[in-house]
Amino acid sequence: MMLAGCVTTQAGRIGSDDGRDVCRQYLVALDSTGDYYGEDILQGAAVGALGGAVVGGLASRSWQGALIGAAVGGATGAAVGYYAALQRQARDQAGIFAQMSSDLSRENAQLDRTQVAFDQLSDCRLRTAQTVRDAVKDGRLARDVGQAQLAEIRARFQGDIQVAQRINQNITGRGAQFDSAFDNAIPGGKASVVASYRRPQPVRVAPRRAVVVKYRPDAGSADVAQINAREVVTTRPGPAGFVQVETASGVRGYAPADAFPAARGRQQAASPEGGSDVRSLAATNISRRDNFSESIGNAERLAAAGGGFELAG
Image (tube, rainbow, N blue to C red; front, side, top):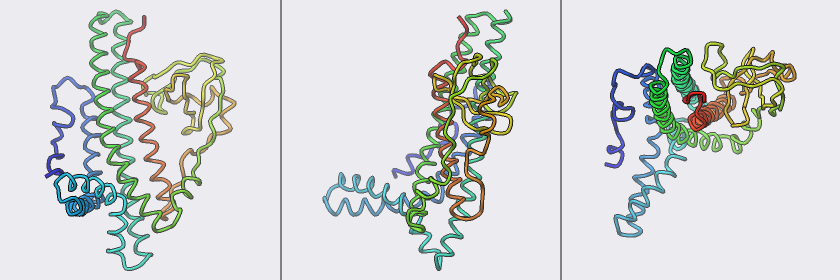
């Protein structure tokens, strides 16, 4: 009954289409990717909750005890249910590794889809806000009308973040199951792979010219900040031609690498290299989960700081 009560339609999660949201297709895409994370691997939580409810009810002879047991059992079942299922299905350790590799490969592919969907949705919101700001600046749109439109876009962006947060909760729960399984299959496995993909230390450096910080490493992406020449910021390696920049307010984005000569020599992959073995897949899974959480945090900071949703004074 508890699980059935959690089931909602997509319209219930993201609202019905009012015909005014130019980014609706990206919102639908993001929400749709979230369906995946409520399936299969979370069955361990349901089994654990059922067992916990029985134990809790027997111990206290009350429905309150059953509810407490269900909560504890659900957490425990979510953590160990996946590995227990692997042990039941696989004939030997090689079979466990083979199944984990298959599951992690599928999970990583889905995490990539979710990340792309959230990035596209966020970029659409920011570019739409930028279009409104430009229209007000050029006199094509009245200031009060522009401010009202920006407030609406910002509210939609905050709703997008809530959708991403809900998805991330399920991703985190599934991640705990993968981590538990990995540590059971290879004692200390998670700690070892986390150590293997430590990111390069950030560098504090100033650009040699004023640069615009983009939301994504793409010249056509929305602007999220402006850095003046000799303004010291934190940089990290980024995709070819870009460095990741973090401003004093904590907003992250991407800027041309040639504007930061001191950081150009440090360009390298910031995430673990791909591979088909369990260790590599586990490492890239942890990295993808971290990246998605960081993307949500960055979106939250953009929304809180204005993030282009306010007109210049």
